[in-house]
Amino acid sequence: MEAIVRKPAVAGSWYPGSPEMLRRDVHTFLEDAAIPQLTGKPVAVISPHAGYIYSGPVAGYAYKAVQGRSYKRVVVISPSHRASFPFLSIWAKGGYETPLGLLEVDEEFCALLLNESENIQGNHQPHLAEHALEIQLPFLQVALGTFKLCPIIMGQQHISLCRELGNVLARSIEDPRETLVVASSDLSHFHHSAKAAVMDSTIAKHIETFDIEGLNQSLETGAGEACGGGPIISAMVYAQAIGRTTVQVLKYANSGDITGERTSVVGYLAAVIS
Image 1 (cartoon, rainbow, N blue to C red):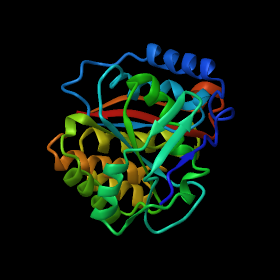
Image 2: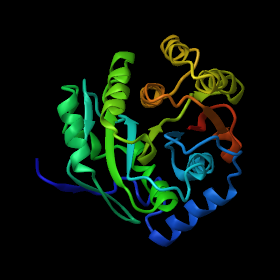
Image 3: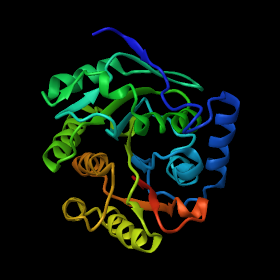
Image 4: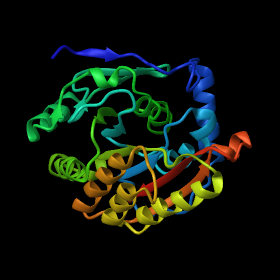
């Protein structure tokens, strides 16, 4: 597999393309976030993935929870918005580039995952235009500094695949204190803010009580929505497998809080598992 660099797809549109402006904006989001005392070093965060003008203030809470901490590796799990495929796509060699610089892929770890499951494949195509993974990276670069990246995109998000991914990560990560898992997800889409609040609170409650089955059921029945429900469940399965099930929901908001338009909103949540 050729080692290539994945170039930014949404820099200059979903977030600033200027390194100076991007770093300034991310710092502002982090500085504006006030989070409670954490019980331990986080092993996973849940962060939204809309344009920074909409979801950046909420994402700031997730990354405030890990700001200044040291991790050897970050595994970012994203849904797929532009491609449909029946497996987990991993960018296994080379790097991911943002306006803030190049993130080196953890090739040894990615190779390990490829060997662990036939449902994990080294297919670059789903990554090329996907925003939900890319949008997390500048936050990670500012909050953490140096680390190696394992980028995963879920072509399907059914519960069996989530459990497989979470358990593969648990088997493959030698020291959970040295790896951060990021679940990239927005919540409900295009409902009135009052309805969105009800649906999103359902998802938040399942996350806060570490109710994986309840979360999956609410997503399947439509009682709640999360375009990255699979990444969230996968991260929770991983955390459960390593015995880390303390969750704190840090922030909730929707796009109407920015635009003032309440008839059709998108929900955003930040949470941390430690």
